[in-house]
Image (cartoon, rainbow, N blue to C red; front, side):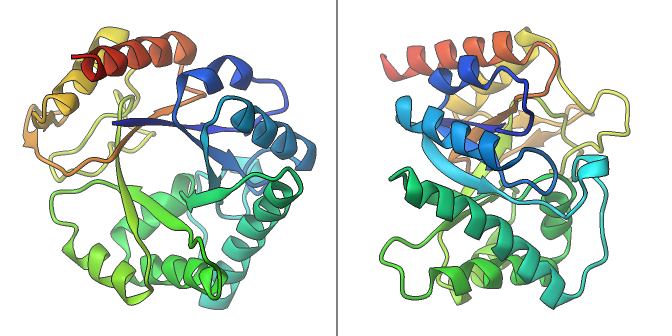
Length: 247
């Protein structure tokens, strides 16, 4: 189980403390947070700690930190996603680092999980960038009970998928995330977060906000760097995963 985190989103943050504790870094590309210098520093930090690098593109919405849905045309959506990935890819090239995958941010991520047409557009944007490259980018999406349609679309675009669960977010009974505007959407108690991680490591179902069992195929576990108590939470998750690996 790999631990991933959204990083490089703020000029003043705890990325330097978090990076040594994770396996995969979803680096903001500038449209919801960050700037070129912060992106470059985050890439260097990931290299220093041998962390896998992913692009974290969003809707062009810095005002709302990319957490507001925008209605973009297909051409606009594809151009915005490719622009952000391309910027991160260029800075990775300069730093002799490898960009491995893409994980959309915020509202774009949530929208593509509920709108297959939008998901197809995101896949198309990545596949066009992959054309002719020896090391094609993968796409990270939310683990859900029935991912067949997502798999089919990704296969059409010759993309491989990472499926992620969330350590610090509450789930609805249908397997999607509780909206951030709802009470209890973000888990801030380390005991709850570690318990969820242990369930995943032991291949036990996740429990929804109404205690419904949710069974997913999960490749990676996400924790958000801006969650309250994030650093202590990530330390606890790292320890839990390492203990499981040492058994």
